[in-house]
Image 1 (cartoon, helix red, strand yellow):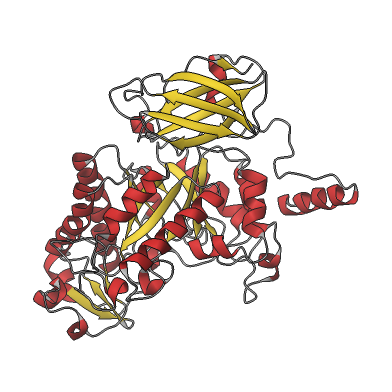
Image 2: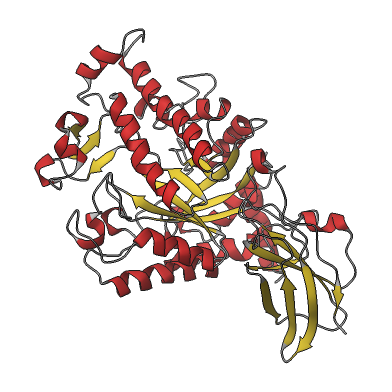
Length: 509
């Protein structure tokens, strides 16, 4: 039996031979989803993405961030995941931790504006969702506590931090540290209009056999069979308590984690995946499968940074494994995609194939549990070295998509039906004007177009969706492809991505 990858490549070769373009969703049964996570990570640690270097002026930093939003729009994304606490520091005026030195080059130095406030405001102005990305325990990318700001909590509480592997970490085994880290991160949630609170894949350092927490284990580890079980319990507490506290503060905010892609290998645990790679359960003390099964997350976004067929970690085997884990749990499943590997000459030959990433998204379609993807990282989406990103976008993002609705929020109060004031032929297309009718201003308007009238059932997918535009009390939008006889409808979308009933239709004459 040929592999899925072989079949996909065979179809592509056949299409090329007949000069017929073959979209990734060649099946006529495919219907584009109305809701799909399309996100990208914007990393700040070591100035990977934003800001690109330390000490830029306010204007330069702001211009760089706006350029990243341009990339998100060009790649037809609907969400950004922005790292705002990379090393126990802050991209906002935090009362808990100092200003990040990745902004100015000097920890604790005021950058002259509020980067988080600016980023959230400008992201929403584009109609994009803003997910605040935090690293929970990493304190510094270097190992000398004396290099921390004098007012840094790690300097004031030296017993809180551990030096390991050339870096500094908060010790997850100290209860007051866990609460402090939560308080520091939740300060941003309380003060800013965030759409999501997001952890990356770092908990205990990888393979932390020499991580110095024996004293804390002796104090707090009674009743646990070994050090590893106690460490997993500490991480479990961080995850479960964060869920509770996020929901208490802002219940409509999405809470999730993007762990490393392998929970455990089948050779270690019969519940594990058919892989043979690093295990988050053992190496990071992160029971990622358990979090999903226990309902502690709104979503999980495993970083499946391997190609289809790759030994010892095959993307084609991990996708069904994670789909099975998420099925029936109410936890949304999004996939972390390795845009950074595509076209990198240091990577395997498979990553030199411009179709590799598109093939990933094609394979995902066989698994309805998967609700979208997040791309790492923003720079690779912009560079698009061998056209792999633009190929995936052209194949799979042919229609706009709203961000997913969290299952626990789906039955909340939907926005009121907007009024479609007109859809008139203008020079070069059709101008559409919609007006909100509810008390609350919509976050977005979704605009649908069809050559004939649509039944209400037609608004559950994106086959007729032509645009998603930022919300306002009223909006004007120009459709360059509109023509006489087209029927237009507008749907209001709230911040939880719930949708209103469709507006009145308007036929272009």
